[in-house]
Length: 444
Image (cartoon, rainbow, N blue to C red; front, side, top):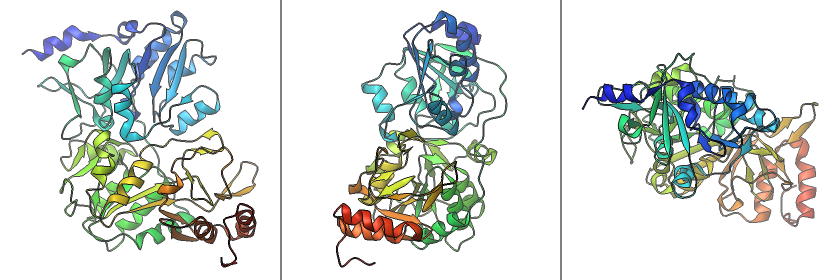
């Protein structure tokens, strides 16, 4: 089979390729580094010809031209499954709508319920067998492309080529059009310096991590801080099973702490669905047979996570109320990120023999006007609940760590107040009394 001839027959300019988009269509930009920047720019050029084109994406770091060119949303309506810092700002500007999801269900949503008229996805150059590698978006990209009426690939020569069992490649025969062009450096997510509070939280968690544990780190400063501290610890034979491969895993591997040798599911291989971070992450996953990218519906399935002994899940959250409800995606009604895989790993780690799930936060945050607020609140007033109180597990701040599993409402109130900032504890006790979740024997 002459795959190069088939490739040439499907080659288009970006402007030619986006002619397939019609008013009213649903268009998909996939996720993170799969964002098709050349096709997006070409689609934006057609703005005046189109109306009501709906676009889905998530965790996109580039400016989206189809959004930026249309501030009144007459032509394009952008929607995100999980907000990057850029998409969060779009939400603040009224230029992005959020789509709730649990990460393991993302591709099944497309498969069973959603329409994709045109899918646009960045991929590596085609190999001699006719395959394009879907790179660091492999956990969801193939499943979405399989549901689309029209598939357009944008060849990005800078993308890392990743390994995996299945789902990390698409064949030229499955593609309708291919575009080429020059790309700038891959977008990176910088590491923020660790704070004293981050280090205090990490020290509490480290006391619960045994040799041979398999780790899942979520997005944020605290997980990366913990990864750096684990790299300097005496722990050994750690493993990786995570929705997101980030800098923390690179640090642990380079320090000789992470080798995946004790994993009870896919031993010897670190498993992930997507990856982003600094350039170090992209170099780490590039042609690395020790890292397997697999479909997110398998990576994040609680039954898969539960098969892993000593599964340790570490994620950030924004706030918790005294009933044990957790918000990790909004401040009030303001969208910050999304549910992502946090609920998947809370569920799966609880099923694991020796497993533990930690939700981390600083005890306070500072408003733009300088006002200090507690992240532990009496009861949510409009905040979106990411994790129900029935699945709350270890909660950690710089003031301590508590395990809410099996605890009564009054025990939860007492435990959460014990790790709140001291300046807010008396007020929280008063509110707990008003809400009927404080009893006389509770500590004062």
